[in-house]
Amino acid sequence: MALTSSSSPAFFTQSSKPLLPSTNPNANSNLFSVQTALSLKWRTKVSFFSGIFTKQKNTQSLKDELFDAVAPLGRGAEATPEDQERVDQIAVELEAVNRIKEPLKSSLLNGKWELLYTTSQSVLQTKRPKFLRPNGKIYQAINLDTLRAQNMETWPFFNQATANLVPINPRRVAVKFDYFRIAGLIPIKSPGSGRGQLEITYLDEELRISRGDRGNLFVLKMVDPSYRVPL
Image (cartoon, rainbow, N blue to C red; front, top):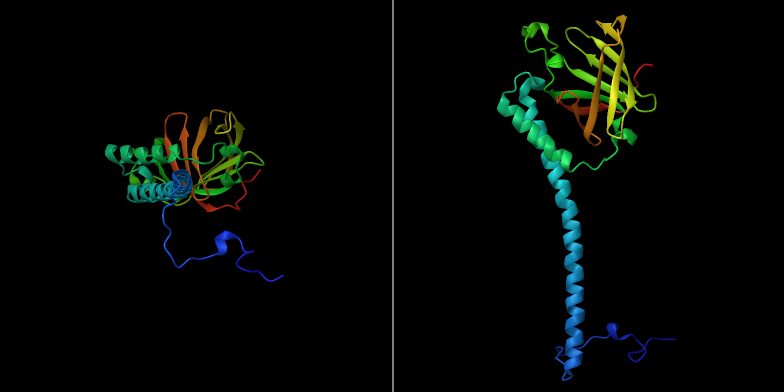
């Protein structure tokens, strides 16, 4: 059956005349209510989606700001108290928008991470002459399925340490080191004193922020998600 103007729904018809208010006050009131509801619904949708985009933009902006802030600080060895305060403030802002509430259940944690910044003196060794400090890149790897972790220095010492992880809650683990390797070759069993705790306070596919039980801050960037920690 062919569609005719009489059989078509009203919203398919067009008029060459402008729409005029109805002489029926109830009709005008109903029309106003419908238009207002549609307008509010549209504004709500726009506000919802713009909120998502703004949050994503703010998170990425904060990450870029953090990467820029730590880049000239020599992993933290060259940081002034003002630098430390600035980096910590950016980290706090990122921690506030962290989407991964249970990082110890997230596969994003697995792999090898490069240490970009820390306040830990046991890592930085700033009281030593510069040539006796770890000057090359430093990595930390984690595998959740085996609950194993590994710290790796590069130039000039190539020292390594492996540890077992014991979850305390979905964000925090106890770290129990079992072996150290001098120059990456000579294994030495841990005497049992190498212990600590680590809390993952921000996590995504490229950035991890952690805080130690002594208040130290660690900022790391993912370099190899496929890396496996030796058993």
